[in-house]
Length: 275
Image (cartoon, rainbow, N blue to C red):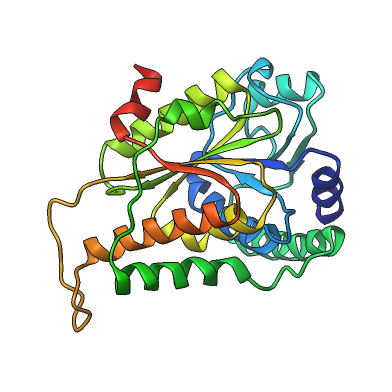
């Protein structure tokens, strides 16, 4: 598995699309963090794509590697992708939660081997610290002027082999999360690129390292929702809402410092993609 991931990444198939059963959604999120944070640095890396429902072959570019956990996972849709020539791997997994430990060990070892194949250090996260430092500056100096940009302008920069990352600083329990998941599928189908949805600030310690240190193939659409309630951070002089916005500001500033195609977009405009 490690050799396969490394070879595919160095030959243009660096969008690792993980296919799981509904009961293993949480494992997919863990794999996303493991792979993105470990491999996304020094301008290279494997881009994990989790939670993206399978579509017909014509909505994909030629940059994918599909890995399914368990025989029959993905069904006819995965079979159609394999028949169309996309690289597809099915890992043995009986679906018993007692087998999860084996999967964890398998993927950890494979990810370390991917690091060797890519010539990077898989056990550090240098670019996470940069976003933390930017957040601290925002809290100390006040919020910067970050204008909302047209989402269409950012999407117009997409090229074959790119991916779209929706970074949503919104209530994770709100209905807007499901709407953004529909947006990602619409963007995939329209532009034939891989898509991810990350909820902030959680994704900062998951895919954040890859976004800033990995390949410059991402287009980042940041959405920041309002907070109807706020809670004071004891002794900090600010609330959690200010902290969240500072984290969003700091991450966007860091992405731009790295030359990434990133901007803050209006939620309503983004949702119009599927209207």
